Length: 504
Image 1 (cartoon, rainbow, N blue to C red):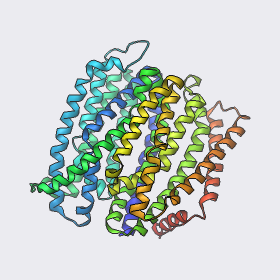
Image 2 (cartoon, helix red, strand yellow):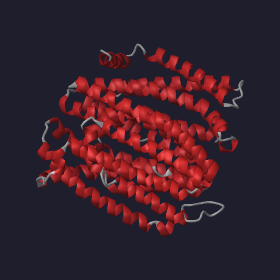
Image 3 (spheres, rainbow, N blue to C red):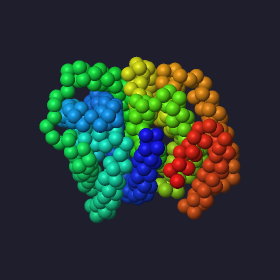
């Protein structure tokens, strides 16, 4: 069982990595042409509308998380009858959610001028927003089918179709940007890509699990009651997560200016690509964690966590150091000095990125254990604190203050609360085993950043060859320092043993 989980996790990760490498290259070409042909104002609108619709996404009431959680046990027991009944319930729920998102989204159309803050108005703004809304509504129509594939540790199959459609989307967007310079065509291709991807993944789910397309029984009242109890807890957590992570662009647009959302989105392109790349490991492992929680003892669960934490610390240090040292040079060479944000803003961006990275193992177990039912109120407190601090610090520090508010809110709330629950109830271990490695890692990360920034002042990076050389130097030295630091830890040895087993 454990060997199977490891194989599926690695397979999911490999397919996801291939997808992200290809998409990274295409996205840079796509973004460069977008800025050159349409301008940073449209880039700001693009990021802002995505942020607004992220907030609308809380209309799913947390059913996506509840659905994944409810699939784990019947999949482990091969209870096809219950799986089919669950799919029938979720189909009705998600069709209703899609209609609800459409109605709420349309109701926001008259108020768009309140959040768009540009010196020069953009024509057809409301029509652009409707395209974004259509893309969001379509994304809900087949979620109930693809979730069963992910829960069954076969996320790589979904990624195959996502890779195919994403490559097609970006290539078509590049071609039509060059031919037409038209934003309508650009976002229209996005909508078409979402529809095609969902149709293909849905068909694959029907092929793998043919029983989900056949008439099935209704869930018992008690079963539905249990699911909706979970959803109530997830809903609070979902709202909190959206308010914490999905409001920065809106606040920046209102308080600083929509054009700054465009500048920030260039950094987010890199960060989101990296995060998606990193998330592959945790998404690939989430179903395995769910199965381990159901079938394994606390000692085995803690072994899995230690391996995940070691991975998260290595990745977080490596990426955070490289990003802080290289980000400004990359944006300067890629787009020009106009698009480079100052180091105060860059520090806030990297701090949030780092905190998200080192907390990933906690979040993965939160989703797979159902721990969100215990953490919902601390998440709500975090979200409220973030909104208040964002407004206060935004007025004082501008864009940097809005972003630092997110980091402060995380550190003062669930950063200490969630580990206490996870370690006490699921691992039967002291939280010191979480915080001590984290403290050492933070010191290592800060020291490496200080060292490289001191050395960087003696070099000027003004071309791609120089940037490539600096990247190899920084990445190589950082990786060497990280491996030397962690090669003798228990988590690294557990991880290495799993990798060696896969190579047999």
